[in-house]
Image 1: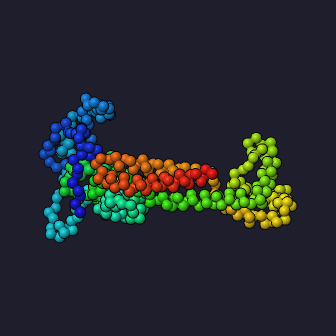
Image 2: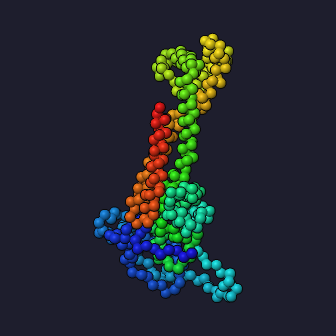
Length: 364
């Protein structure tokens, strides 16, 4: 479909009070013949006396005198223009205008061609309700985040779009042009992505947390486990005798249980076998105590410090999502801001409550 008209001001900025774009100050050159074009991207500078303007290298570069007629003669475009026949007119394909570099454009096209049409994507990002996490697709949101260009590139593209009315644009450029009117696209995608991925991330932390709680409960109720840990603690302090950083321990991190198996005696037997023998000597019913250590064995496979650090990072992501949401809510020209405040904010704060509850369980 046709691209939507450009707004009066630059995307994301109010038009009121904004200085105008620099305009050409040099006189236009009139050519007497067709010459070969120089494909560059023109730069126009702000007046040197403008407040806050910084010095740039082009301030020190002045044009030299060249014989225009000589240049025209040397670079005359002598290619003959063939009159198109009816058959060639049918075969003629209009070249689509590109703005992005060929490599960047190719990557953007690969991703964007898998996304919903711009009109559908716009609807997805703006029509937010309480069930938005069940309606939106993570692949679409992640894809748009991957392919969406930087704001500076979007601004430059829109300038060229405005300067070339009626031009047919290539796929990536056309996709951006037809979606640029949606405010805060990147922020919306980041917040929605966090919401869509929350459930999976929560499960990632709940599983080891549940195993740890089971292990601690088992430890509190089992005399065997307490005797086993006491034996391992005593053995470890003897083996670490004289070590100022490892000896004289009052306890040890629960994942350290697995390391007992890696210690071998002079007969190449595991230290765990030594612990088992000592426990059996204490109480014959302790035979096969490894099975009773099931909860601890399940939890030992998780690096609890690493998981705890990851969980702190996950809480940080939640706070970042809430801060990003505030940018959307406080954007006066964003028509979807109210919906995000009503529905997405409620979702993010419910996640915060869950995370605080999980944090209290980790702290225990």
